Amino acid sequence: MFSFYFFSFSIIPLFSVIPNAAFAQMEEFTTMYHHSLRQDVFIKEEYHYLNVSKVGTFPVYDTYKGADGKLRCELLSSEKYSNPEEYKRNESFHHFSIKTPCMSSPCQKGGTCVANYKYHSFDCRCKEGFYGEFCGKVPNYHIITIVNSPGRSSIKFYRGSLSLGLTPCVLRPSFLQKRYSFRTPLHSSLMVKGSSGLLNVTQLVTLLLDSKLVSVLCHFGNFGCGDGGWTLVMKMDGNKQTFHYNSTLWSNKETFNLDGGKTGFDAQETKLSSYWNTSFSRICLGMKIGQQIKFIVINKQANSLYSLIADGKYRNTSLGLDTWKSLIGSEASLQLNCNKEGFNAVCKDSRSSKARIGIVGDNYSDCRTCDSRIGFGTGGYRANNNTCGNEASVLGPDNGEKHIKAMGYILVQ
Image (cartoon, rainbow, N blue to C red; front, side, top):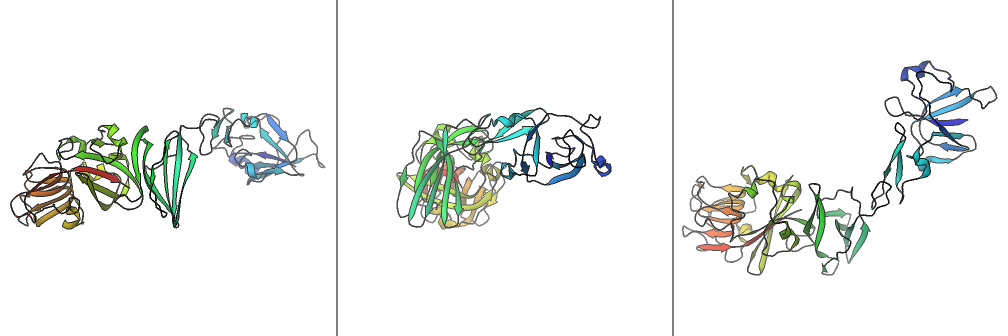
């Protein structure tokens, strides 16, 4: 008995192109040329069988003679290169396959050869960690997995694949373990702090964002926003007008000072493409006043921060007055009425205090002329030049008049 393999008419023929209707009427056919058949060069491999589903079984005539002058031909639904584990020695069958470049095993490092029978060519499907035409190339970065489990921590290095799409700085939980996976240059090193099974890592990594390799500082572990991997989005200086409420940086898809994304919680401003191309379920907000940084977290799911802010529409949060004030500390001050918080927080009078992310307060409950705010991307009455921090007028704030400018940090997870 002999096994041939066959793909349906709509795909690529591996034995002959035979219209589906012909199968119902056909009891036997010859290997002689026929206008509805395509001929190819077949390679015979004796005593082998590919254990995949059959398209059909048909008697054929050939120069090989069986007991009745016929041989049984099984047309198979796939081929051996796609199913190497199912291709085994068998004393009852010979296997015939179309001659293909895959016969020479061109794919290296365990890659799978995918034959293109129409054009007598092939492609290599590479294993993770390799790429290139023949899977022989190794990328110039690692994929690093940090595993935390109760009582111990470990870091595992393995080479990554250029085709692998990783969400930047993502926490990947697995049962009781916590896995952080990211890519980093081969020559780089990790800065690891802490003990007792908890890793705090700040690492400059190379991420594929908008089809471009961008260096970003990723933060892992609990630095103030809880466990997990955090992707930097923005850093802004409340003394500068770069990220004023009216800045186009909030509504466009343009980066600003990419080098600022390579440093930590410092005074460099930056806006990364993670502003519009990174989805998340949590936002980490930090304010640095002097040498002290305080953080809060917003649990909010979105396709990107851009999707929450760029259109200018108000989207509320429910953190509460005290949580927003905790960004500033004991010096924080806000009016006790209105307290409109969230994204694009603006009162009825557009000249009054406003925040792209934050809370605004008024001495009246109608939110008409807000005179105080805590937030990021701020502006308006009374200090239009304070773009990140806390402003409170003399009209009824709970802790007196304040003009506190902060360095702001926005990260997502």
